[in-house]
Image 1: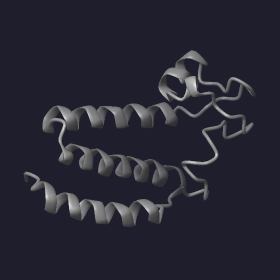
Image 2: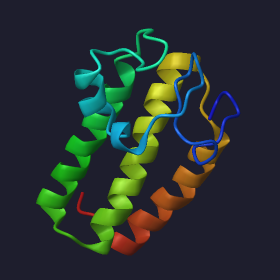
Image 3: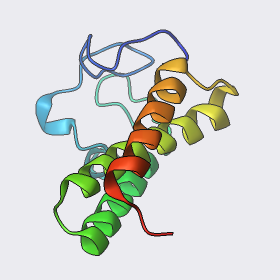
Length: 120
């Protein structure tokens, strides 16, 4: 987001050589291990940040579903948590908080608080 790149198009690619990542390599933690942390094409190192973000997001999703069950509130909480994780790592890397996440997160957070009757 801070680099004005879409998360939808073009498909996932190596940030250095721009080669597209195949569908079977889309699981970044697994691919990172199989490819020893390197791009399949240019052989340059891939930042460990990618599998860390994926593992953290998966752990948060598992925790939310384990504590709240498979509910609409859990889905909203997972979406909100993924926005917070994206903001965290964006801030750590670039010191920029994209408006797409901050403004959308405020709206979602207020709606989540009102509609879920979250426990405090």
